Amino acid sequence: MATSIMASGDVGGEAGKGMAPEEARALYDDWGDGYTTSVESWGYTMPHEIAAALASLADDAPSFSGKILDAGAGDGLSGRELRAAGFKNADITGADLSPKLLEIAASRSVYDQLKQLDLSQRLPFECESFDMVSCVGTLTYLAPSSGVLAEFVRVTKPGGHICYNIRTDHKLAWLETEKAMVANGSWQLLTETEPRPYLPNNPDYADKVLTVISCYRKTV
Image (tube, rainbow, N blue to C red; front, top):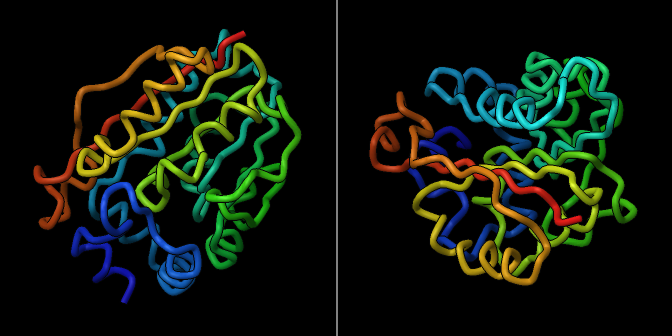
């Protein structure tokens, strides 16, 4: 069931509205064992690209020993790519809504901690807990009104980095929040890519639904 929903292009529901947490949890718990095979067959490269973006912002990724939050860690593809990008000595916390995906993520042995949580709620971390936040392919399921971006800023240390991607069919819904947070001094936009392939080998996405990667620095 989950793969057919994903292929339909309807994952995340109406742009700006997100998806009910219980619906998203059921979707990914059901998909669990087949998730990696599905997304890799569709040419999904966002875990690699966002990990590379964060590594480019670090002074020296292999010597980086700070803390990274992988928000929406899924089955651990993004954590695997963070390690592959050079973050061998980082303390990485993976967080996701789906117990099934977290079980698979644990088997990859790339996280120092794993936590089940709902990103639409206040994050259970102290202010300024992390040096970096990575969020791969997850904002589709959330609404800007959830306050998730403000929460990313809250848990990031001053001068720390936050990188995430948003599908082009959802990007417009997030623009007002992103710009308001620049205007109020919460963060500074460092880089934002042109729209690029999201699931290029999935015929329902291909060149119809692209994605944008954005990287911010928390204002000191």
